[in-house]
Structure formats: C-alpha cells, structure tokens
Length: 285
Ligand code: C2E
Ligand code: MG
Ligand code: MG
Ligand code: MG
Image 1 (cartoon, helix red, strand yellow):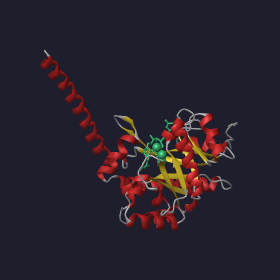
Image 2 (cartoon, helix red, strand yellow):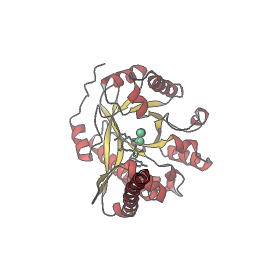
Image 3 (cartoon, protein in one colour):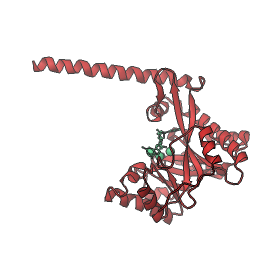
C-alpha cells in the first residue's frame, strides 16, 4: 500500500514538474519575440523625498504582457533573460525607453524633472561595448545623464572584475548616478564598497518590513542609513508600506522613499497624471 501511495505521489510530482518545465521552455522561446511583439513595457514606481514629500523620481520596472499567460512577473522572466543572454538586448531597450521617457518629462516638468532609476543586470556590465551603447543612447535621446540612475545588485559589485570596475567608472563619468539595489542581502564587502563610485544605497525591502516589528531588522536598517551617511552616500528605502516605517527612516536621516504606502508601479501616463497633480504626500510624522 505504501508502495502504491509512493508511486502515486511520484506521478503527481512529475506531472507538476513537467508542467513547470514546459512553461519555462515556452517562456524562454517567447521572450525572444516579446520585444518585437511589443509585449514588454516599463512601469514607473514613484520615489519621494522624505523632506518635501514630493515626487523626485521613479524606478523603471519591466512588465511582460504574455499573449496566453497574461502578466508574467519579472521575478520569473528576468532570471530566464539572464541565463539566455537575452538580458543584454532587453537591457539596452530598457535603457533607451527610460532615456526617451526622462527626456519627455524633462521638457514638461522643467523645474523638477523626475529622475528614472534603471535596473542593470550583472551581465550587462561585462557586455562588450556597453559604455558606447549608453553614450549613443544618451546622445540620440538628448536625455540629461543626471536624470538617469543605474541600480546594480550587490552581487554585481562582489563578483565584479577589474573590467566591471572600469566600466562603472566610465558610466559614472558620463554623468549617470549609481545605486546599489537590495543592499544588505548580498555579499559585498564593506572595504570593496568604498572602491566603487556609488551615490546611493537602497535598503532592501526585507529590512524595511522588519522595522518596528523585529529589533534585529530595525538595527540593520538603521546601520545601513548610518553607513551610507559616513561614506557620503544617499539612502533610499524600498518597500515602505506603513507610516511607522516611513517616520522611523526619516528620523534616521534617510533621504528617499519608495513603496506601496505612496504608490505602486504604474503606467507612464498614470505617473504623468500624478505629476500633474503636484502632490505633496500627507506623511505626518
Ligand atoms: P527591485 O529592483 O528590487 O524592484 C523593487 C520591487 O519591489 C518591484 O517588484 C516592486 O514592485 C516591489 N515593491 C516596491 N514597493 C513595494 C512594497 O511596498 N511592497 C511590496 N511587497 N513590493 C514592493 P517587481 O516590479 O516585481 O520587480 C522585481 C525585480 O525584477 C526587481 O526588483 C528587479 O530586480 C527585477 N527587474 C524589474 N525590472 C527590471 C529591468 O528592467 N531590468 C532588470 N535587470 N531587472 C529588472
Ligand atoms: Mg531595483
Ligand atoms: Mg530593490
Ligand atoms: Mg528588492
């Protein structure tokens, strides 16, 4: 009997596995055409200043509207893009779209044009000709480089070779600002951190979640803000979902805030509507 049951659960297991593998393969195939089929778009999640409570920028987040699966999460397709190398053409497209958008907003909102933060995969950093590509995109779109930030993972820094270090310096020389994403979850060493021309540390959502809930997480979030301050870097907190988290971070001197408490990632037209309202977020601490 036990043997039978064992056999049965094995069958269910393989069926589920089979389904998953098939879907994975399907996504891999379809991702190659997603760009051409115009199934990819960028959404923008507002980033606000903790001093003025106004929008000062946003993060560009990729969305894939698949013809049969519907909206596929970047958590699912970015790893596929990285494994297959598709991340490079995809990433170029993201940078170009972000620059076109930044330029457009720059001409509409001249007094306070929002910056756009763009996620850069580790592979993109070592892609041949990446600096030239970025330079060409900036020239073609006429976008001010100060309006663009690149978000790198800690792993990109930890694993990075001399080539990547040089590349980051060249990107920085173009006038683009650099940010470390999901800070505190990777393996970057503090001594290496100061070797890179980094402007901003982005505290990972897991620590923000723990603020006032876990003493341990709260201490880490606090330590990251203070570390950034002592290195002359700015801090941004991602994943702020309640006012307690916001006010705690603000009291420590964190400069920028991003999270569902303010806004979710939204389409560019919606983002523009929000900008037009010239909103001051009602965050009373
Ligand atoms: P990330 O760069 O750390 O982006 C922040 C993620 O946190 C986004 O998920 C955003 O929707 C989510 N988030 C923001 N605020 C909150 C909050 O208050 N609560 C919760 N629960 N979540 C919040 P998303 O859009 O699903 O993106 C997931 C990841 O996919 C990104 O993490 C990034 O690593 C990757 N990704 C997205 N777009 C791109 C891209 O264009 N290029 C590359 N290389 N990676 C991308
Ligand atoms: Mg990011
Ligand atoms: Mg992040
Ligand atoms: Mg994250």
